[in-house]
Image 1 (cartoon, rainbow, N blue to C red):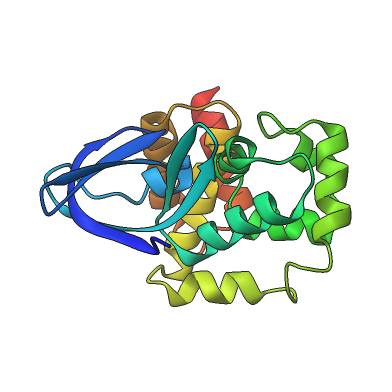
Image 2: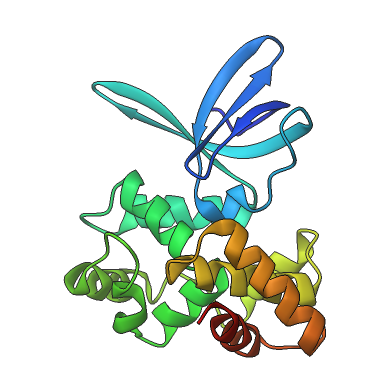
Amino acid sequence: MITFLAGKLIEALPTHVIVDVHGVGYEILIPLSSYDKLPQPGQDVKLLTQLVIREDAHTLYGFATTEERDLFRLLVGTVSGIGPKIALNVLSGISTVAFRGAVAGGDVKALSQISGVGKKTAERIVVELKDKIGPAGAWEAASLKHGLSAGEQRLNDAVLALLALGFKPTEAHDAMRQAQAMLGVQATVEELVRAGLKKGA
């Protein structure tokens, strides 16, 4: 199994990256949540990976954090009807923290708003994962252990929320940085998103 790849980032797009590892170029499919955390092309990068083998293809999926990869594995390995493509959509449309909260709270409406996830799939996600996502707060604590301050995590979650609402990556980042500068680093995700939506209106 390929657990991670570390090398030089050659190309970075919202859907995939190309990483040069000792002269070999690897194409790796990624969610938007990982794209937001990438360095500039030409710099060193390390991505956690999951290899999915099908009859017609061997595909590498990459993630910036353990939480993202764990959620991908959980969705693909546990929820019937969810393959890698929909799992990437989930990671692109909602943060791991917000996902845990939606599953724990049975928020089918929030999950069904993610691209590719209808009401029936959202209901399956809640039923099949409710007992598997761990105690409340566990994922938040894990996220903070991996190098993001509380303020940075809230900013990241707010950016992901705007992306899920149809904002372009640059628009979402700019709106959230302006909102945090105005409201302060203690602003909640909800406050940041509301301020960002007003700017984008």
